[in-house]
Amino acid sequence: MNEFEIVAEAESPCHYRRALEVVSSKWTVLVFYELEEGKMRYSDLKKRVEGVTQKMLTQTLRQLERDGLVERFVYPTVPPTVEYALTGLGNSLIEPMRALHRWTDAHYDNVLEARRAYDQANA
Image 1 (tube, rainbow, N blue to C red):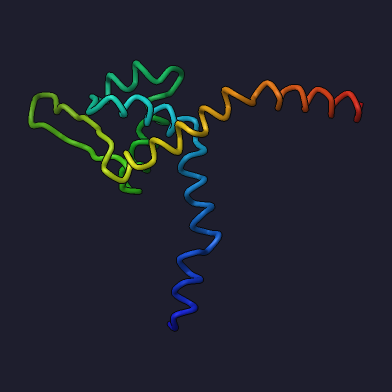
Image 2 (cartoon, rainbow, N blue to C red):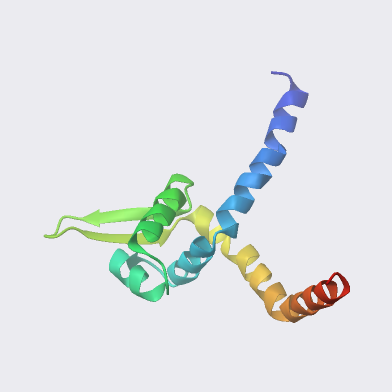
């Protein structure tokens, strides 16, 4: 692989798409906001992330762990206690997620207005 191919691979749109997949999941965002406060037990996450099923929470946490954004801690209790925390990489994603949240707060009414206007014009 030559120098150009290495750079092209690092800047591949596929990498960008994967990053968008990570942050575009509503469950990921909600889990991140909860874990921003610190390490949390699975059962507490389940209670705090409104509407998430056990299956979706488990899938989300596994994917975040696989991506290196969340770390899983298992303690030898009966039954085992499991906690999750953001990794350094996960913490580095908090500010961009906050920026998107701020944009949404500031502009989502404009999006809804544009949708109504479009729907009326195309009805």
